Image (cartoon, rainbow, N blue to C red; front, top):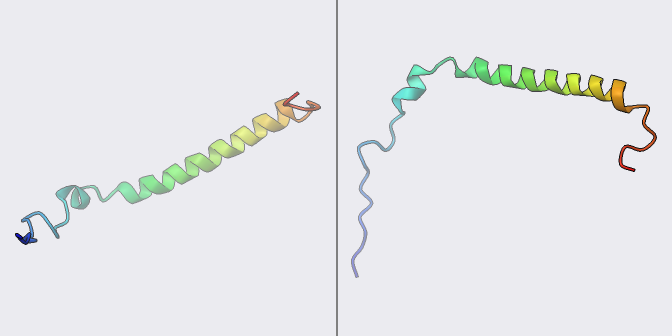
Amino acid sequence: MQEEKNEQKDWEGKVPDVVNEEEGDKPAGKNIILVIIIAIIILAIIYYFFFRDSDNMFS
């Protein structure tokens, strides 16, 4: 039986360069959450004005 050797590659354990170069991604993640919340509020307003008076939407 041959045993496999787990040799570490030269790229293992290192941080990719993209992570160091793209430091502005954290504010973008916060903006995505804000946009989702605004979209839910707008959809709730549309639902309130257009569908609240219907007796049963699914019939």
